[in-house]
Figure (cartoon, rainbow, N blue to C red):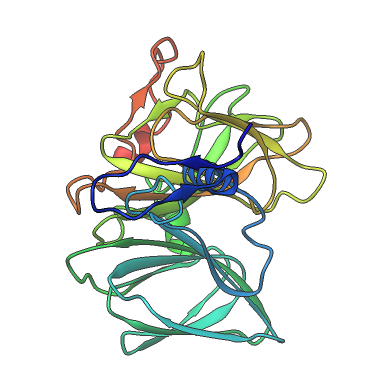
Length: 298
């Protein structure tokens, strides 16, 4: 069989040859655009952006990581048209932005407005999760201390039951004035389910999970589905992996003896109007006892 095919041409057009290699490349690009899992997003130092609307099914949400140490202690950049939230997973750093200098420690967060020059430095090491989305309006820079989150029962709360106990921490939620982004982190009991009962919020918010503090041999299993009989994704997730949820229910579970820990990042489809945590649709059949997120609405 001839490996080359001549495409039909309109009058006045030049000849176009489509090769077998072109077909393979197009298929690969389609697969990459539709992929729901991004592996090892914490494997490089510096500031690295792993997920954007350009390389994924996200419409607004951008996820990156800033990992610095004594060998590479500084990173500078501009937020451009994006609002940005940074959550410190470990270590400490100083962030200069919008005329302010703030020291950030573990689990502290900072909201940085669009159009801002940012400089991050550390004297030891730091691991920051970056959550961004484009916005029309410029909102003020705000620092969120985790000590304050811990004191607010609507921002930090335990939920779930015998097999799905977890602690939800909302660090960039109703406590922050912003346009699209919402962020926080969830820690489970060993071997438990989280994001249970299965829920979805695709009409208002897109979301992704980034798994952290799960050293080998720990791992979990993530589900993403609109139809439970034909799931869009079921896969093993480990430390540093990220899974996007442009739509659909998205429960996950850890292996016995180990928790599943993840930072969750969301972007509202309509600026401000859709920026609401805890407004979800629970999968029919699992909706007898609510969503488990009711505390966040108090």
